[in-house]
Length: 555
Image (cartoon, rainbow, N blue to C red; front, side, top):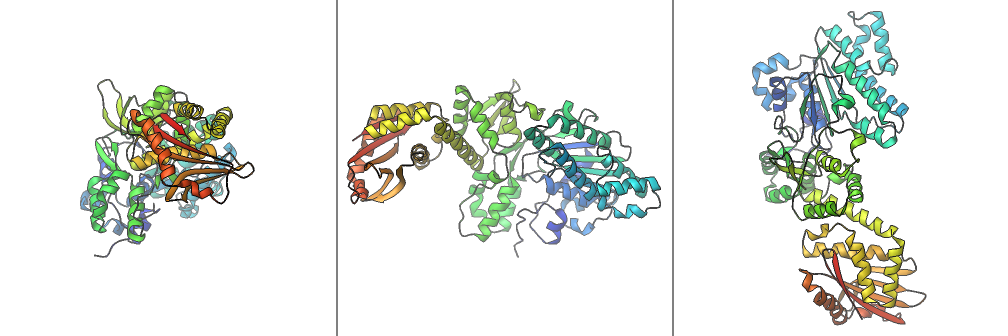
């Protein structure tokens, strides 16, 4: 059987089907939407969970000018009566607010007008419709030109389509909350809330031409914020069982995809790296990651799993979290990094203004945006939260490491004490300095292999040394009978330092492991790297780490 192309970055259903990309059948969403009727339906999922592709699929199914053959062989095609009644029967308006991210309110309005104009251009035949009045045609021209009443524009377009076809309209709005996120970051949040509230209110409440609507986004924004004019929209969040399988891939779908592509040997790798999200009662994989990794497996000699989600998510929230965290919260983060769980309440209805008001809200944001998932609801209404998989754990490690390195670099007094201890060979002072910095850290390094743990501490010490511009700092330098962890040489004073690092399995091993690091420097003859330079002073430091503690031996 010929293997189909993996749809990396393809979120247009028509293109995916016409060009024979691999497709995981999510057309069951159509049936579920129609059988569980709601005039306004809101789906919230993290980034890259297939929201845009599903919206494109809905458009292709319902739109009057659809190519019905796109659905041949898919699950929905077996629902004969439903297809006869609904397929290709509606005018459909599909807009995305993903690009409405202007730095100012004026710029954002212009971008929203572009979406309306693009949507209107798809129905250019309305210019000549005999069912529209001359006034309505002038309004339509304004929509195409980005002029008129922006707040009422979506409603105006739907009324014209309804009048032309004699049928009510379906409205699809993808990434509905993107403008709010950007407006909050750029300082015009209140004005954008007012605009979006009216925009949705006109189109989705006071609109007798609306058949039904579907919105997707990341956040379930507070009803009082933008949905105050709507009558009880149906909400489908990460906690809801309804429609839990239609966004993201199920384990059954993953097995089928891997089997279809001859990749079943990588099932456990895929599961460990990209599975772990619990939506309602279902276990879900992030589709963006799996599709990219399958493409990599089929086309790249390097089969090592990669972090695909890091490049498409707003990872700064983790650094904000680390900065706000108190000692208890940092210990809880450490526990998560070790594979544990924390018990927290999930507040789903938040405004963007509320996001970083307190730590409780940030826990909720981390859950909503996919950095954490749940492992069950407890009797007191809290949820057990955990990091879903290796990929997200890797993002936590990277972001927290960056935050910690910045924190260390900003502590100039602490760094100067660290440098003085190194230059004088004072093991106790060096130990005190490192323990001071470790005390303010988040010990995510406790997860992973021994090599992973040593790499973290290696990066920490190396990062503390790099600001010393007058020193030549090298990492993993080949010397003697092996590679020394860190070497430093001062060209002007001809001072040299060799540092060897160890990670101890338990606290009581710290003294012996620090001494073993010194012994290794001598045994492996790491001094040879300086033989041509003839340093005036040469100091050896053996440093052993265990969680937030260290032991230093000097020679």
